[in-house]
Length: 150
Image (cartoon, rainbow, N blue to C red; front, side, top):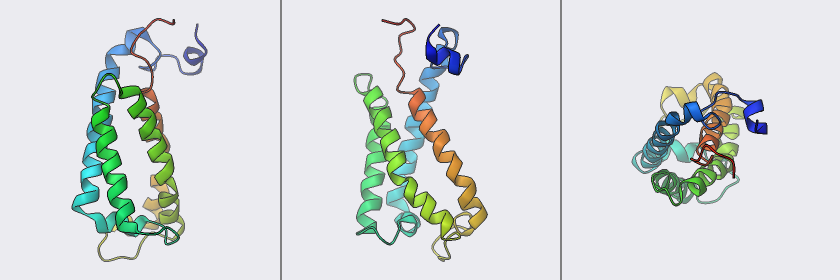
């Protein structure tokens, strides 16, 4: 038995019987990343408000992170680079986490350009653990498709 099977038995990335879930997980994450990336270009003011004031050029950062989300999401669909893309998504999610922390500790954002969900400080804190779920989701996509250990 592999160490990872002992840690989380039955998850799609570990169990040969559950391997049929790998593709839907990957497609779901790819779709999520592409849609989120497109949103950076459609409503950049929302994302600009999340950029901590210590960082320069918030609009550029929003566009770069949006482009990265789109590119990495699409790369998940390419078998040759899908595992690397999943690791890239993990790195991106870790890189933008400080913006989520800033959003929460600043008490939500009092900005008329933002939807009510972004202005609510409680929801800002609730969002924080979800970033780890997205990281885990991306990590599931880093697992090889083979069900045998080399």
